[in-house]
Image (cartoon, rainbow, N blue to C red; front, side):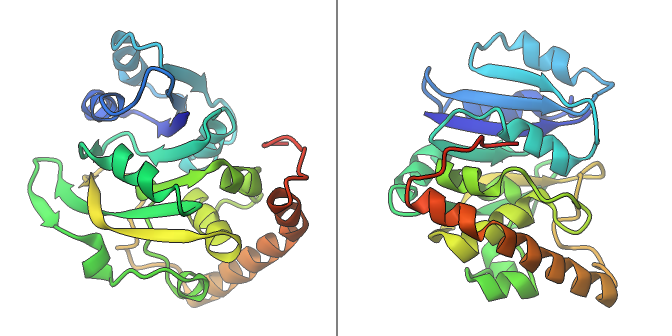
Length: 250
């Protein structure tokens, strides 16, 4: 079973086309988990009009922000394979098939993507090549270029990563998932674009293209990441030994 986890907030412009690109690749037994962060536009109305029983809507009413919104979606996921999805991208037709094949040999997969503006103009044909993306924990510690919308992983990674660390300013959802995977699990990069990643004026993050944090904050963020990773070491051991019986999200 596949769970696609999407965090939404005022995404009426692209949400219908994105969901259609996802649903067309899923089986009747799969699910799309939508956590909505109190949208004030027609986002949820559009989602409901699709009338697809695979879509499950949950309202995220406290501690607003995209990281906690994604965490809220993830805690409801029931699938053996979990995909992250933004509300405003588009999945290419072979994304699910290609990713599931890779997940037979890996715990965590990150694919390449094509970046377009909201009018469909290509800004970057390959994020992997532009940012010279390679896997590795220490590369991630220095500079992460992974995008959450390009990630998919097995349920063991989900068990390890939830609940998220307390400070989401120091640790965004996708950075945390990638850090857990790179340190404790088997990661594979797919050197093939599997989504169209859209950049427009309302994106929730700058995708690593902004000026970045001051040096003092960068150091604090990395120390915080290492501390959080150290804290879950015993849980990781139990998960790998199939002895972990705790709730996915406490």
